[in-house]
Length: 125
Image (cartoon, rainbow, N blue to C red; front, side):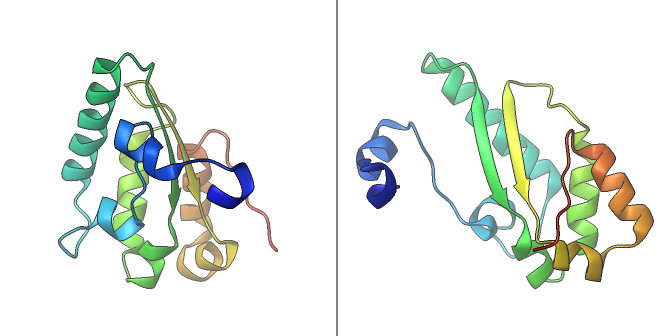
């Protein structure tokens, strides 16, 4: 962001306009995923943003850490509880590596994952 967009990231962070965290920090800060904690975090982040006059949040998540850490089942459970739309003003983009999906999920799980995400694109690189 600093180089490509010539943006002062520290300033954006200090104002609370962006929050940059790793997947581990956000989804399993104490070593294991916890769906209820994550959902409570999203809700708190949205409330804070709304309180600052924003319309909601946008989240981009790299989901590969779930696969690296052996949390495929927990990831699938998390995605399945979200549904296609949040019940709060949020837009979420989850990035998956097709190799992770095809080597860790069944065809049925992949189909269901596509149903949970609207829209979903699966491309091989």
